[in-house]
Image (cartoon, rainbow over all chains, first blue to last red; front, side, top):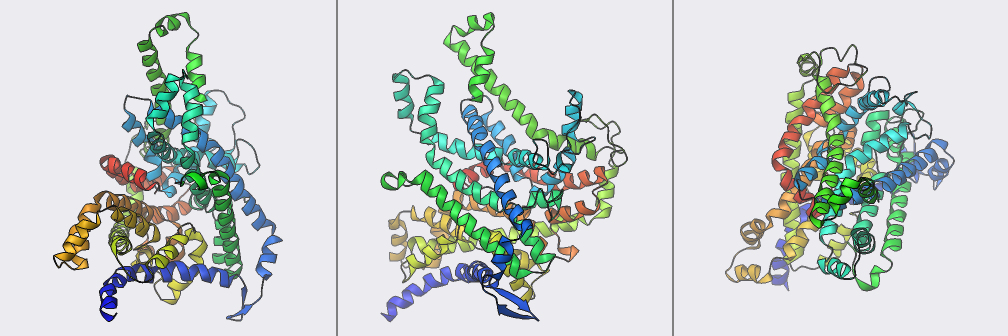
Length: 301
Length: 298
């Protein structure tokens, strides 16, 4: 027994560093976010206040607007990026000239830091002389859109500008994941379709897209999580308040502002817990709605 | 659907219909159309960067921007770059970025693979429980735990140090998971044979397992490096000392103060971006392969 324990000791040494770090920087902070959300700092002492912060948040227009805004930006982004990248990936998959060149170019914005990209785009969308409006003026658009200075829900406002930015950044990554999925579709399926006399578009619609199910699940789940925790690019463009008129504020930005500008770590933690719950629910919904059938037959991603 | 539109709009002319009669010509036309669409996309990908470069080399960009965007500066000058380098300790920022990225990535590779090896080939009590604990938290975004992490760093007196930027990221659930999956595919016989020969687990890990993990380690290195190099939210929480700013974070902080000087701001971002782009040109095959292997992005 003792010999066996000593023999397995080395394995505990191997997993120890990861679990010490895990305890310190994952388990403890996650737990602590939950704990802090039920407490209130009263004269340097933490006092239990129950669900007070959650009640405060649910009656807080700024928080609710940030929550809604995060969801809105995420949904619009996914609705655009998924079909667009699927079509582009399918086209690129059929291209015999320079496929790797295009793959590399489309992926370029993804390796560039979000900060630098957002900085460049703040000038690209400058209303008077920015790249976009410069081109629009050349083709005779009048009046020119205000982009990042327009907080309303319009097609040429701040939300549209940051959605264009997000699609521009993520396109290469989504295409890459779709291409990996496309290459995994068994070629027998295509052969069978050709035998049955299906045209290329019919094959794409009836064979390719259903076969990409696992890829869709993967992209919807990771895409949802990314969208819900969006911060860097919008913080660069609009500061922690998501200027103009909080049109760019997300939950994480609200969290940051509450914790580090209002110094209310407890309220910020409560908003973090709500973010956690929303992410959890969306992940489960994605799993269930997309994976429901898969559970019996095959595993997903 | 965009594909169908593009193909059908190209069809109507009579000359094209004649060409299309043969299968080979149809294929060739299809290639031309796809190539054109891809090229338009590629131009859209490059244009903002090119415009950034052109503006950063324009002497008058700080005073007045041309109303019609130009892709070549009419008055080329390195003035903005000189101002950018004098304004900010950019070389210092670069050094900080390199230190933080290299140390955390080496740590991430080492500890992830070591723990991954234990989970793949080890025999010990509690193995599956520990592994499941690690997996369940993979989906939790970093942002949810950032506030207590910040408070912890403050309590440990680690704010404003390299340790604050490195320590939380030298191992991780995702890396451990990936390495465990990869090492599991290595045949048990190989490991067992070495054990029979009296090799210690450490020797087996270092001499046999690690050399076989090249692709997985390369993929993890790419991801870790991109995460650390481009991170901005964690430095925002734990750094106030300017001498510790990374290039990404330094650029973010600077852009808030010098935003009105277009030329200088774009020169600064060019300095922050270009070396990474050049590196990417050389390593893009490995980077893209790594992203495809893990499914994650930077």
